[in-house]
Image 1: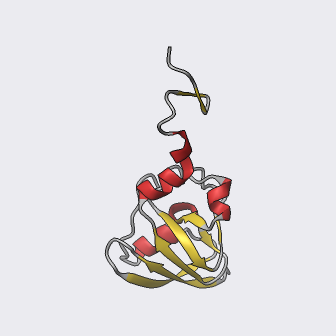
Image 2 (image 1 turned 90 degrees about the vertical axis):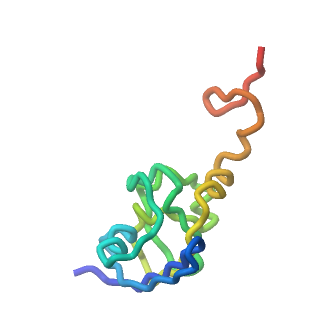
Length: 122
């Protein structure tokens, strides 16, 4: 039997706050949806930033979060679609474009990109 944790999600776009229980062996987004809670998502595979949250307190395990760099994970970001709670948790939804800019913004406006590095135009 797995331990269950209380999850609090502050949804920035709607101003709603949701409180629900999630077992440690269940994804947070999937469990929220099964309880009728409408949170942002897109791919459900940890590859985009639509379901990104900022962790205000608590911890998650997110081994499949390909859409977040290790640096953003260290800064307290998580993807709810592939996050398992490891404690009681309080998070705030984020704007997908803001998270994308934090992760990839340094590459924009620098010309063409090949293999992750800017290249000169001919």
